[in-house]
Amino acid sequence: MKASPKDTIDKSASDCKYIFVVGGVISGVGKGVASSSIARILEDRGQKVTAIKIDPYINIDAGTMNPTEHGEVFVLDDSDETDQDMGNYERFLNTDLTRINYMTTGRVYQTVIEKERNLEYGGKCVEVVPHIPLEVIRRIEVARDNAKANVVIVEIGGTVGEYQNMLFLEAARMMKIKHPKDVFFVMVSYLPIPSKVGEMKTKPTQYAVRTLNASGISPDIIIARSKQALDDRRKEKLSMFCNVNVERIISAPDVDSIYDIPVSFEKEGLGNLICDLMDIKCPPPGSIGSKKWAAFVKLTHSAKTEVKIAVIGKYFNTGDFTLSDSYLSVIEAVKYSAYTQGLKPVLSWLSSVDFEKNPKLLKELSFYDGIIIPGGFGTRGVEGKIKAIQYAREHNIPYFGLCYGMQLLVIEYARNVLGLKDANTKEVNPSAKNIIIDIMEDQKENIATKRLGGSMRLGAYPAILKKGSVAAKAYSAEAISERHRHRYEVNNSYVEALQKAGLVFSGMSPDGKLCEIAELPASKHPFFLGTQFHPEFKARPLSPHPLFTAFIKACKKKK
Ligand code: GLN
Image 1 (cartoon, rainbow, N blue to C red):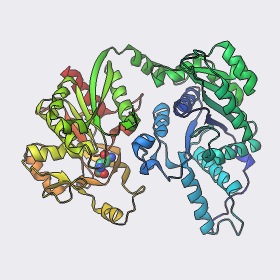
Image 2: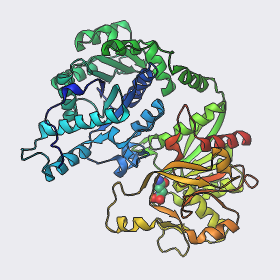
Image 3: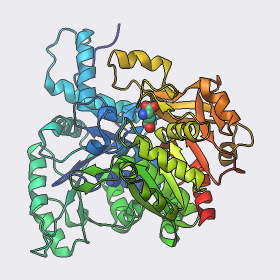
Image 4: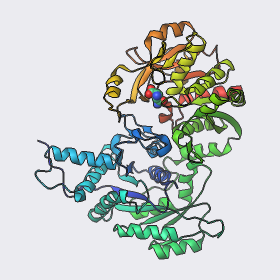
């Protein structure tokens, strides 16, 4: 029989420090990057850090949200569909995280309700408080143990004062009561400079801190985000009215690159401050891993020659604003490979729908050194993407297709080289005669029964590479493992014909049944390759992705 869930917090269990990162004033000012940067500087000072993201919405995962609503869906090795901040943690910590590092309100309630249905609460009345916060705490503890971490950073999504993150703040407060010397709070706040006033304003942050106080929590540190650095006057004001010592107010002005932030946090004294606060012995910065990081940051500043990449997609617009968040990992992956090639990446966002409305625009693609078509779903913009791929193939422009970008590469080839004019994916035209991209066998039932959440082919799967191929050369390996997120696949009945027509399937699942990479040989095209998986999820600043690097090298040659 399973043990009952605890209804108290195990006091002895803490050899660990917990840093809760909360947001004040507005969202989107870099709480995730601040959390990742704190994680980075502590790792560089010899600590074993893990990071947890809490998203307060009901969705069980980020997989059911439109990217324009919530940004990129970041997929983990273990198949979890998570928030883009998990990508930041993995990139900054250079590590693989698992589903226990990500929680949502929906996920927490789901577990509690399942346990209740299994009679695991032993006849007790199961209540929102304390059982929901206790489940939050249990998850934090499991993540800590799995990572064998001595520092856990927990980022609570949204901003304080929002009804939906109250139970998470309550969990943090409960942990603080049990472990007063081990639990700390960092508030990442924003100080606006209204253009008509011309002065940096502290009042919104003061209110945010008071709201946090109402949850029984006081911040230990305030990271004050703003357009420019805070002056002493602002720091003193914040200190006085937020009850935080002046040296614990960290100025965090806008920077060119998020990778500068760990460096600038150290300069502001945040590393020493946190180590003192946690009362742990931290070697000084620079003594462990920060040299590698510093070398990478240097590259981001020294690269001057531009490499121009067109990213063709459709998840760009929210109201009147353009958003590139939907493809965050793609952008980052391009950056790492470009910087290590001594190039400065310049990305342009092109809407594929525009190519449909005005095919003359395709000509503009020749101004770019390379083209990427990232993942996508549905019908809108697909024809424009296929036209762009054809243009890239016929004009020798390096092309890199990710997931949908690979499927459409195969369709383009089938249409324009094999001559199957109505070639299509079942996702777009189920009645096409030539279904080149078909629904995966085990996905049919999911779709028929509308089991759509968390049911795609997700997470890490292995693939075997064809010797001598562009892919095998890029990876310098015969076998790889990459992360997936799709329901459709290349229809094997067309593989032979496509191969005869020159397309190479250079990556296959180990059983040989599923096409993972399609490419043209180096003798036929500078770079024309698509992956059924999402290589971008495994690109890291300290280990750029080999396929992105091969693509960027081809772009460099085209220049
Ligand atoms: N829509 C395609 C599929 O489901 C591709 C998905 C993607 O690009 N992530 O197979």
